Amino acid sequence: MFYGGNLTRRSLLTIAGAGSVGALAGCSSSGSKGSSPREAGGGDAASSSGLPTPIQLPNGGREIFPAYRLFGYCGSPAGAALGQLGVGDLADEAEQMMGKVTAWDGGRRVQPVMELISCIVQSAPGADGQYRIRLGDDTIRQWLDVARQHKALLLLNIQPGRATFLDEVKAVERWLREPDVGLALDPEWSVGPGQTPGKVFGHTTGQVLDDVASYVSGLVTEHKLPEKPMVIHVLRRDIVSDESALRPHPGVALVKSVDGIGPMHDKVKAYNAVMAGTPPHIHPGFKLFFQEDGRYGPLMTPDQVLALTPQPEYVLYE
Image 1 (cartoon, rainbow, N blue to C red):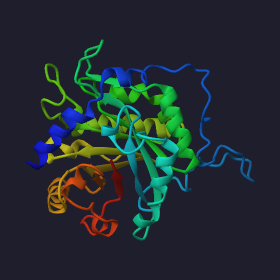
Image 2: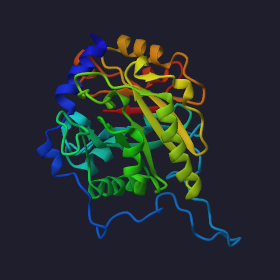
Image 3: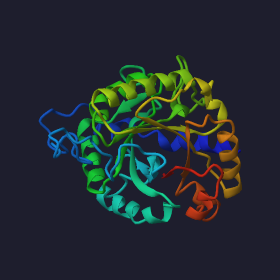
Image 4: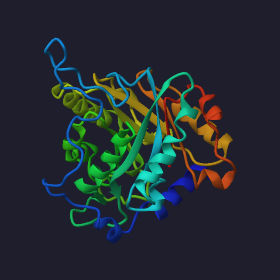
């Protein structure tokens, strides 16, 4: 089955061994060096009027849509099953990603993104029983440094296990105060008490997502930040119930990325099914899988993806 195969793949491959991830997890020391706050797109410098210049997105402006299309790669240093980025040399992979940027313009400017799976679902409960592990600040800082070298946005992907999305998002607030860091949420991996990730499909509600969007909007307003993307990765429609409860929020660009795996006709069918009835304030997204899609033949081309209706405004390779 199309969806069932995806669950099997993620159950067996996406859940990295706790030992390999553990070396990357934990809190880094406050003395670690790396990106300084708010350096991405400029801002906070005095203008000719003597007033601070509003902080910009990495490639200019303060709003993502409709000026930009988001395009990028995802991954994690925790394992190759989590995506292309972080498997080898991160800088080299980012260079490869940047080489594909112009193919995705389709009449818009392209804003590159690097999606780091920073909260990783686990097959074992862990010390706190939440079935997830968090990457440490040093790893996030390294990725942000590389993203800034390419004027890319860094998106922190959350696979919460039994934890809540809001708690996991609050855990990375220090990074969300940066002007070039956004969010990606993976409700397939949000499970309830007594459930084990990988044995059941996760689920969330529009209200849960709205609470996260409201929280992020508050950070954007408080710190005078440019708009932040909040991507929701959706494999099938029933993973998010009562989607209408997810309302628009100032400073938050909501995106629903359809993550179907398979040959082109299955991916298009899944896209049409998941996007049907989506509220207009939620922007369309599409994911391509190097390995899993590649088993069925050549990956869909940029022209084929951009021919979808609605046209994806966010495209990610895993």
